[in-house]
Image 1: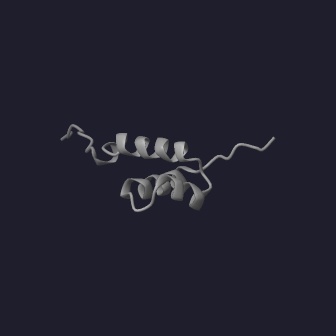
Image 2: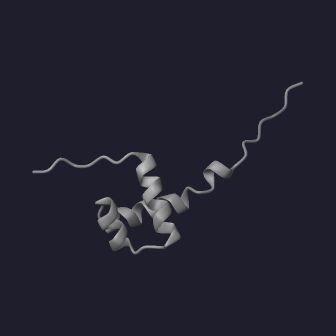
Image 3: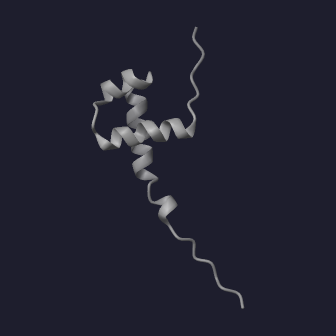
Length: 64
């Protein structure tokens, strides 16, 4: 039995970004990175859903 691969968040983001660009099919990305197409779709969906979080500005009360 093979050990499960644990991919870093950076790797997942890189693959998701390529999937979002849609320059290659999921099947082609799967071959390129050795990841199942379903996994790529999951990473892509998560990236799109969480895209706004880094863009939110935290509102902090000013203390003077």
